[in-house]
Image (tube, rainbow, N blue to C red):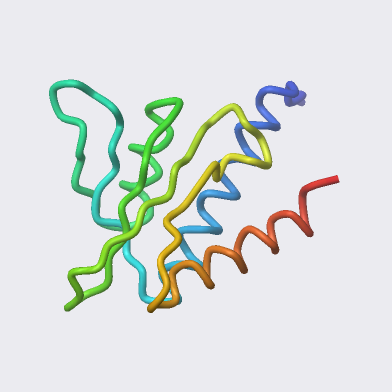
Length: 117
């Protein structure tokens, strides 16, 4: 039997939280379109779906995920900082006029209720 280290537990928690966020945003119509990995040569990596988004997110310590809706020019971003544990979602866009901020506020509230002790 393999015992998880504290670091392994933190990584698993962060991945659960980011996946939860991706799924909840998708339910509200927000689809990840790009991940800014901060790479000097190719910072904006186009993504399609949860799996590819997670691959890009977990390939770096800090990134920004861009979300959009079909047939809309409005985009939003979420800053993800791995190593922050339950606070892996470090920041997100705050615009009035659509449901992104309301959805993200709900997501972060649910995460805080479930994981933050």
